[in-house]
Image 1: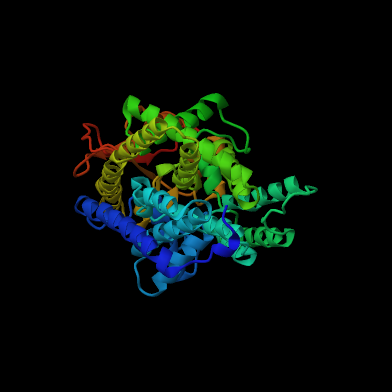
Image 2 (image 1 turned 90 degrees about the vertical axis):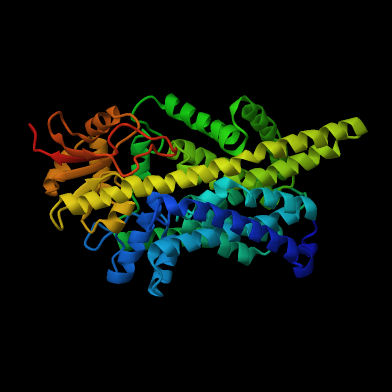
Length: 530
């Protein structure tokens, strides 16, 4: 690792490469957005959850309620800072969905800056540029920037914090990590990782590490607690989003409990990660698996190098491990676009370049070095197809939101009386456009609903709330409607199909494949035999 005295930013030497990286990433993201626009008129964000943040921000700026709709149950956001930033932009008459889109793109660019800075402190200038360039060309990151979600901003603050620690800027690191935990609560694992490093270094007579002092760690923890208390004050309870996601992915109410056998959930999680590396980042098919194994070996090698650097680099590796464990046992899924593991995906190019540098340094024979260069070219060639694949995903996702979720909102306005409440799983765009009170049967904004979901008494709860209608997009497998109904406590005969429709251009989620089944169900709740 370089001498901290040489880590100051030099505008002439580093400014031009960094500007080039930002322009490349912005051009890629803008291309994704423009290509998808004709398929979803009026739909700016590619993920329904992004419209949850936008709806809360719109309600907060107009009524002062931290709720998805005026008069609705408070809560629904697990990111206090993100929703607040959208609300601030909305105060300047910027539509909240556009504000979320602009913040997402800005967060991607900010993320590149922080990654470039930390890469420059560990690698040579050329390799730092290449590592950041790979990230800037990542279709996954470009697509994530257009979802209206906060993962990239939280990760940017995280990298900014660890980079500041390497430069021994402890106060700036404290600010960055505090902002990170206000953006995503699980970023509190970062100060825990630093605590572990300090405990491991206690009593060692070697060189003192550059991790934060206990006082700085206490500040970050206090900020996290204050943020949770503020969210609790605004919403009446702590966020229910994590608990709701645990139910959705088959985990129990306790952090280490499951509703069924745990092994299939964990195996699915590991399989999804492997498939993401081989097929979504790599070239796919059998070649992608070999590609992924080579990249994984480089990442492991780079992680070992970072571990031996001690201090902040070692704490960073510990954080990645803790976050992986948290997501595995706490959520059971990496989420859409793997966004729950965003720091891990962002770290892959950096760690791979560190491992590649180590591997190339060991090659002494000219033939070995030539083979090393050939393998490098093949790895880079295998990375190229992912850009097209993620562009297709983004376009398909925008089209799905327009064809199905936008159509859901139109259907509610057309079929139901004004102000008639309706229950739904996907509430973001529905709340944004329908003008009807929305009850979330996914529990994202209601702890009471989460408790009923686990108890299997959602039917009774909706009856108590005088909700007569449920609207759902058709899943790939129509049997899932009955399966989800049973999990929610709808006995046979208590949920009747009032009508079903094909959306204007009904397509399967995450693909451009046309489907021959209904794209939308409007279901009527009857009292049943309870």
